[in-house]
Figure 1 (cartoon, rainbow, N blue to C red):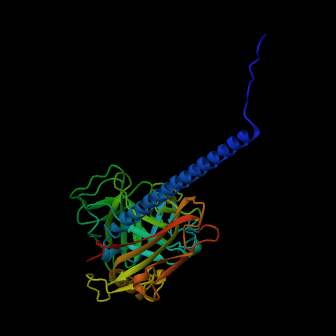
Figure 2 (tube, rainbow, N blue to C red):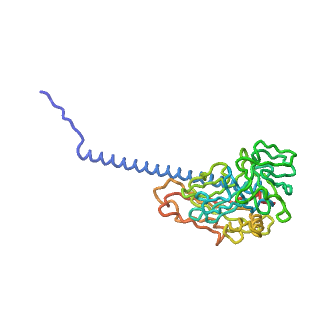
Length: 381
């Protein structure tokens, strides 16, 4: 007789218990993975934000520390600049600058720094920064009286000047950019000849022959800003665009005709002037808004009559800038990680403190404010 062995499987209760344990394990593991992913994204977002904060501060501080370098103050400050490129008028611009600089004055005035308050998107500020880049920049040479002629002027000597140099010819509050002829080599000869991309005999009604010097208009001067290759000057606008990028626009278009992105995630840019009201250029004893009376962009860019003297005086009193930025990370978190508003310049009291309102629906993205003060060393004369 053959015995059959009974085969036993899992009972229904056992299967149900096993399934329940499996479901619990899956939920636990899924929760742990989700939390780990949230943690990873949070760390990544915080690191990205920290990097953006550090880099944006570095970029702006670098440009501002150079502001005013290579600008002959007595000859050039508060002077509207006429520029031609390939025989087409570049400055004053015949049309609005490209966004986000379309609200900035189309007449460019040489100055270390001018802040156009609220001229950027969402009321952010725009910086106009000027810096020369030549060993000969600090001192302007006088043009020999009645020597200005089409394509040339006469100086005491031309030592140190070379072909491709960009120079500012100035007189009585009028400035013109010229390019030294290619192949020119400075010497004891007094004749400085112009030619090339930025050379023109007349720009925006300003004629080179008008820089002849006279009892009425005074002496004309030539100062070197830099060279078209190797050490170009930096005349630029810096602000944020609607894509939340910090961008720079080269006013001479040496590096292109479009604004160039510098930093991502910049939500706001605000600037204050540090003023030495004694005029000694030593200690900041007052912080003022760039829209304050006597320091607005309209005042600093006014080169008409007594306005030029007032503008130069105000520029000389500005010895530092305090910059505030709001930076945002692109990676959202699961829950809200930012308050509804952020404050900048809170230590300066009423009238100077600025509150940034976080846009609706974005409090799950990380925001951070960064503030730094930059002394303007170059304008101290």
